Length: 123
Image (spheres, rainbow, N blue to C red):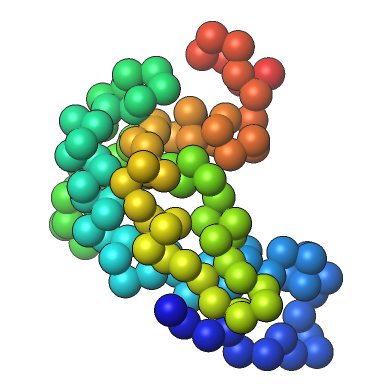
């Protein structure tokens, strides 16, 4: 587990309000994230568990094949696994397969609370 460096005076109040979010923005999802992400995608057969949309592979600017319309969603937000007392993140629990779900971009936004949806239309 990584230790968080002390917050400097230039930190915004938003980052002080959510130290777990600040930690994730700075350090990413942990060393085991690529493997756990691949396992979750394979387990869910590269389909969104919420609406059934199927992911497809597309070449990016550098020529690598990437999943274009599908991502892996943390059911419990990763910042919830941050311990502000010890200044450490528990990546093992955060990236556990039971906490991960494959989602299309539309459903991922809805699950994170960034959009509301009725049927397949944003409200």
